[in-house]
Amino acid sequence: MKFGIITHYDVHNHGAVLQLTALIRVLAQQGIDASALRFDKNYDFLGVELKSKYNISVKSIGFYLKYLKQEGLGKTRFNVEKRRVLNTFKIQNNLVGEYYSKARNLDAVIVGSDEVFALHTGPTPVFFGYALPADHIFSYAGSFGPTTVEDVKNLHCEAFVSSGLSSMKGISVRDMNSRKVVEALTGISPAMVCDPVILYGFRQEIALLESPYYPPFLLVYAYDNRMNDVEEVAAIKAYARKHKLKTLSPGFYHKWCDYNVNADPIELLGYFKSASCVVTDTFHGSVMSIITNSPFMVKTRESNHNKLYSLLNEYCLADRIFTDFSAMEKVAGMDIDWDIVNGEVEARRRESMAFLDMMIEF
Image (tube, rainbow, N blue to C red; front, side, top):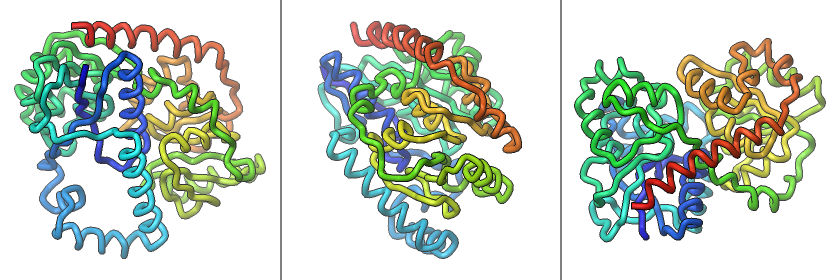
């Protein structure tokens, strides 16, 4: 069988690439050949000025020259290399296929995982199943991210969202907010499944990874425009000094860290595996900590508290959350019962695989 996948295939984010890799490998275990379908995203809600950032063209030159001036050569060089590393990984692993409207002979199309239902950039039809080249369309671990029911209504996208979702053969989501949105707009109660990274687990890959050649380190995993506030940086550095750790940021550039490291998505798991401790404020930073059984703590923000709490509570890890950096030491000092966590992971994998099996046996 041959499946297409609609997800954020073109973002330079390790979590997005890792979840796509995981879903493709899970499907391969079921004898299914799958790859992401290319498409054009809608950026209407960002405003005309920001479109140049995402739609690469001659118009983008001004934006990136401004970026270079504001962010500096170090960060710019790091992100150019990051783009190369991730693009190479996608090519080597055959993650991305043809443009969706040119795809032929697909048995099914899966929408998800990741924040495919979020509307903060604009309404992209393929994320909701419109005009996809197959009769059998379903979602796996889709998420609305920060988008709420009220946001959908305020953006005048209620009919657009509800019609698309209602036409799918099956809907599954990865967090409680997304379930509430689907229920409110369609009357359908979607299945709750785990992110593909947890579903696949990368167990064989992790077992083969060697420790990177760095002194003991505190791994910092946050988008490069976050965890840069003076108070946040001071708290992280103080924790690292107290515990005789270096600060290391893999995949994102933080000038204040001792080490900034480019790595492909599988190599990135090696840094999580070897970290003395992880501090993150991202969904996939938390997921990678879980599958590598790395001691970690999670800073939540207004924009992501709900989805991170939903994830961590599901695996008995809600106590890893802190909202103020003054609580970081306390959270880090609490032990994690990995036997309980791993038991919950296995239970979620069975439930999620049952949904996926049901969707592919048609």
